Picture 1 (cartoon, one colour):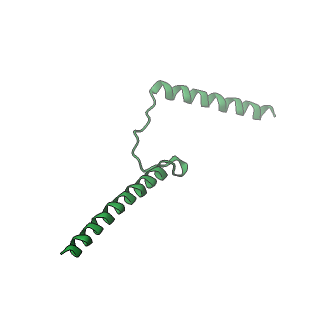
Picture 2 (cartoon, rainbow, N blue to C red):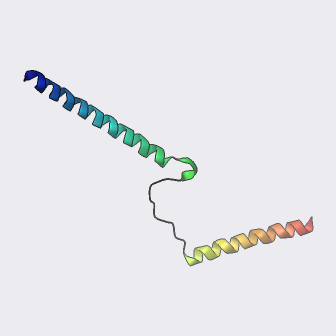
Picture 3 (cartoon, one colour):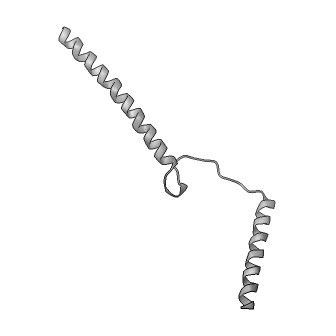
Length: 76
């Protein structure tokens, strides 16, 4: 009977050890997902939404850049 109890105790100790190792592996996987290539991540982040005014400012700035580029290209 003592041998059986010793075996159970050894298995419980091994289970705790393996659970600790599993937590470490999960933490490592989580950290790697955060720094995955191209900033892509499996973590769901809320989508960034721009206001209409912000999109208009960005569009106007891009049109100005294109106009400047085309003007330089015609001058050359």
